[in-house]
Structure formats: C-alpha cells, structure tokens
Image (cartoon, rainbow, N blue to C red):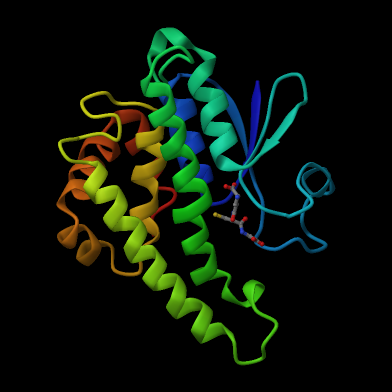
Length: 207
Ligand SMILES: N[C@@H](CCC(=O)N[C@@H](CS)C(=O)NCC(=O)O)C(=O)O
C-alpha cells in the first residue's frame, strides 16, 4: 500500500485527491510543520528538506516533490486516462503545466508563506513577499489565458494536472477575488473540486 506523508492545507491535498480518483488505498501520515524534534525520524530520512508531500511506494521507494508524485501516479493506471501517454503530443503540454505549477506558481506561494527563507536581510521579508505577490498575479494570468477555450489545461480533456492546478486557489489570501478576476480558473475549480474523489478530501484541507 502507498504511504503518504502530508499535512492539512498543503500539496498533499492534490496527491490524496489523485489517489482517491484512482481508488488506490493509502495510509496518510500527518507531519507537523517544521523539521524539529517531533518530526518523525522516518520522515526526515525520506526528505531532508522536511517538506510534504512525500509518497512512499509499496516497495519502500520514497518520492518527495509534488509534481513528481502527480506524474508518477498519473501514469500508473493508463486505463484511467489521467495522463496522456508519452507518444501523445499532448504529453508535452501536460508536462509543461506540471512543471509550471511546481516550479513557478508553487514557488510564488512559497515566497509569500516562507518569505524569511528567501532573504538574509533582517528587514527583507516585506520586499520578498511583495515581489512574490506580483509574481503570483503573473502566474494566474498565464494559467487563465491557457484555459481558453478550456475548461481544462488540456482543453476538453481532464487529467491529473487539473487536480494539481485546482488545489492552488485555496492557498490564495483572497480566493474569491482572484477567481472573480480569472473566470477560466474559476470554471476549472468548479469542474475539478466537485469531482466526488476530490471533494472527499478537500474538506480536510480547507479551513
Ligand atoms: N517543491 C516541493 C515543495 C513542497 C513544499 O513547499 N511543501 C510545503 C507545504 S505545501 C512545506 O512542507 N513547507 C515546510 C517548509 O518548507 O519548511 C513540492 O512540490 O513538493
């Protein structure tokens, strides 16, 4: 069985939702924020960064990095159609969005919520955070434009990357304002977050 190290309000939401979508059983292990003494020894060995999510495969292989986990799981049961096959031209588009979400949008959020980790200046946090808020606006605009005609990132084809994408608006300080300004993202959320498998886990992640 899979073991997922996660925490409410983090990217373990997307992984849990994908596992539910696949009807894959998993054990969820809650990891407290930080990498302190109360962080399970087992977890620190799996990810020295102390970040969640980390998925441990039935054979014991550990995968940190949310995009890697989403890509791995999306490919696991091809019959479910959760990811374009490697030979499908849409595969490149799919990978592009997985990486954009992980390397760009997620990083904008990290710079907002963990701003102190991105500066050594005693008074550097407000500037890091302000730049990250601007960066985030750029990211939303790029996603919004890509969702035309939509409704998904691969057009009319739902895939695992939409679950990943649909998670991030919940992290916005002003979710409803952001979605008002980005109707295509709002539509994607409407489609994705109402899927029974996704809705089942979302309540535990949204406060
Ligand atoms: N690149 C990593 C980032 C993971 C990450 O930032 N996780 C957050 C929760 S959403 C975390 O564990 N933060 C605690 C920390 O950075 O100390 C991924 O995509 O999984």
